[in-house]
Amino acid sequence: MDKENNLCDVCGKSDASWHYSVNCCNPCRMVYRRSLKNAPKQCSRGIRCSNCRFCRLRQCIQAGMGAPTPWSYHAIEHLDILHIFREHTFLNYTFPENLNFEELIHSKSVNYISTSAHSQPTWTRTNLFTSIDFIRKFEVVRKLSKPEIEAFIKQSYLPVSMFFTAWNSFQNRKKYAEFPGEIDIISDELKEKHYQEENVHKIRCSIIEKLAGLEVKKEEFLLLNAIIVCDPAAPHLSEERKSEIENEQNRYLSLLLNHCLRNYQKHGPSRFANLLTILNTIKIVMDAAEKISKC
Picture 1: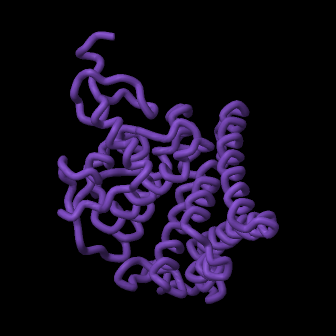
Picture 2: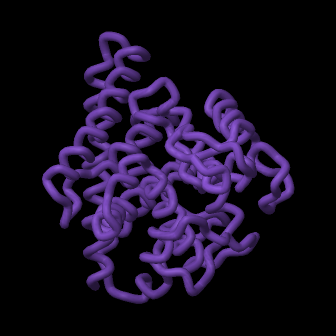
Picture 3: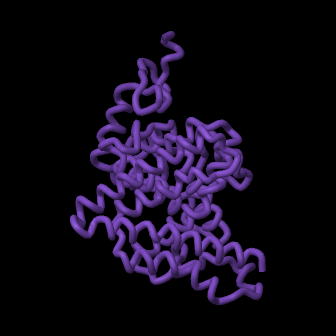
């Protein structure tokens, strides 16, 4: 390969070779490899830099580095890293106002805007956009055409964003889903409309009640989230692509089942079945949100 075409996708330096699904140099490969074993602490500067391991790892993720297969030894560690960056971006950044859905999906990198203040609308937008950015880093997305990527992400980004919000609120010991600063996830515009209180309760509380009732662990949350992402029911996909996505989903299901059997022994099968009921709860919340939006 020509040296000038052998540049690292992460840092732009030469002497790169193929590792973790991208062309990268050895230092960037080692940063990513070490981070799979021990996720770095978030950047203490509050803005992206080029020196700390957290921000160097961010560059690796943005370049498309990923675990080779979801059933590999590092699968859950990789999901954890993606979640750490998603959460860090959600809490500390926002997106350019002129950035739309299609541009975000297909962009190679995103120019985040550092911020410490959010309104309800910007929290909502940042939540949705960080969910989209999270999904597009999955290995299976790279096999899809541009129209297929749009259809695939449109299918899953809303339930993923709801699950993220519920998980973050659950982690903060809240009894209902809310954005940081006790900001309501339901906009003032929707509050002014006449809607059923039952649907509002479902949106705010159903997923958290399920998480609390089952005392869901982070590893279980990460795998359930991956199962939601890898939804083969997305429209406009060929049968071949649907089969590939379903296989990916089944691998995450297998990881979750193995986790349950390993940690809950004879109660593993029932634990696995109970965890999967969360997916149905998310569908119920999605239906409630759709009813409110149509009021």
